[in-house]
Image 1: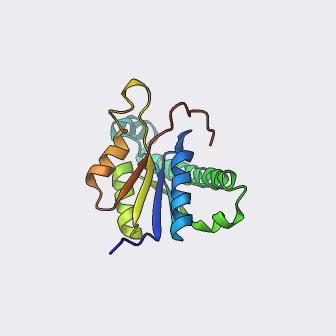
Image 2: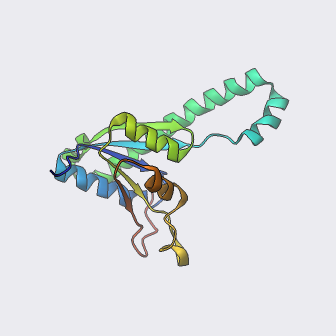
Image 3: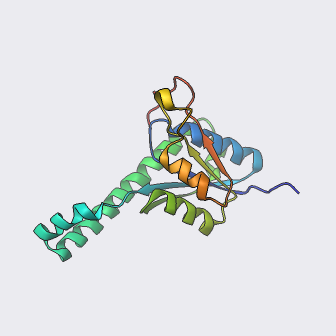
Length: 169
């Protein structure tokens, strides 16, 4: 029996070339009548950097400020992802309904991608490779490589086409 793909998780890092992976996600969603969830992971501040800041500001004030800035950043990223989606789908109104939701999580990228895929019961994870230069055929990039190794969900890693480095998000 062939697998049924109805729920696609597209994980992006908002790099200049992430549009290539999005186009594959959209093509797959169109051909299979599937929905796409877009996921961006906001990295956490390294605890070694937090200690001096907390010492200077005080713990309560630091966590309050961090929470406010985190909410602002998440909203800006969501707006950016909405704009990116509009630009990518400008010629095809029917494609816009394929994007089911846009999520921004905080934490370790690999852990968050895998947790989100499990929580959403994603049928496939689509993400871009980040290898560039001489070693582009040797290394996928840390996050795609780790997701491939740990995922129980099928993963499609889209390489950057040769010479294509001028897409703006």
